[in-house]
Length: 515
Image 1 (cartoon, rainbow, N blue to C red):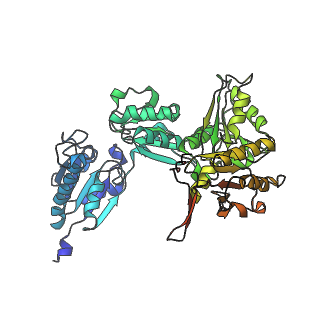
Image 2 (tube, rainbow, N blue to C red):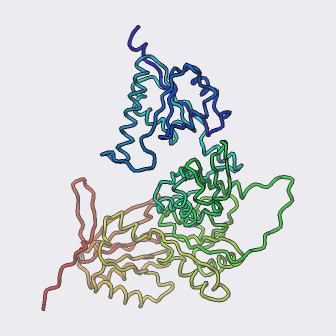
């Protein structure tokens, strides 16, 4: 018999979340046919996987207990915790390889699914390339938790995020804020951190707790009501589908009366960045998902995915005060409102309009938050290199809300101070002369070859970035979707070896000679 014929077969067998009746038929078949049953356990020797499969184990099965040298405690291994585990996995794989080389069939049994946070995966990485291998999927603890809660995990276009509770609190908070639905695994000692992250991300009220789903001692509750001292490792937190919660009403149910507002809602002014979702912060993404009403300029609202149950209030770009008043009125009636703004809402955008109205009666008691976004100036600068790498000024050339004389005075002052400039709203169909006049004013203080970046539709489908000399700036090439970045006397334009051009302003400014 050849060596190849003597080689055994490796199976990674998923046993499901704990209830033996949730094992798949294929899992039972593989265990029945195996010569060797291997399972992981902590040093106490009790294996959850073995307990699940116990009724299918035979007296003539060879059992390989793969006992972890450490779990969460410290170790004196020279490689530290990770080194101790890596050494253990190598030794465990070598033990299984002895059986496989002898022609025995080895089934490594694993609770849940073998390739989902499962111990089996460490054997798979070390052995699957050497021996015939098959992985038997199992029902995950996530599916079991959702089933026990009776709550859909995700519906329609919702995004489900699976997170280990061992992540740093800031990372957990950001990811919980930015996703639609979530499951946090590996609670136990991490529970206080997970709870704080849920609270900071605004998801605590939605969060459910499931302990030992489908197993003896199963418990479910609201996460906010759980005592951290009672939480085992085999527990998860579920933030279930908002769409499912909002969209279903039993056919036979009568329409529910409108709920009386329990108090003022909230207005969150959200900066969506200069373009699509790649420019959206996790905090802003979460606020948009949590809102009951979205208020904004229609072009910006179109960047936000449609969610069942949300109301959208679109309007023209020139009615900022009316939008602000609508949002605050909705919040007074107990609604959670997101005012959608492009870029950063505090830079020539909606935050000022909302706060101006919110500072008046009867809106002084309405909570208002402003969430930052990527500004058009910073996005354009990043595309060009780092032209705003030193001190710079941001000026709008629109004279719709302030006289041109004020704009001209500020341009002269900023140019005289040798500041790089980010010029917003340089031109539109009704404003055609401002760019030429600004160029004229700047040339009073800047060299003709001062670099000017024309950044158009940054982040959008028609994005373009060009650099010209100040004296060559053509107003006819500037429209309402263009932002201008004007360099200082120190700004450099460099052609690199790969053919790309970068524009940057040094952080160090030359010392002025003594007079």
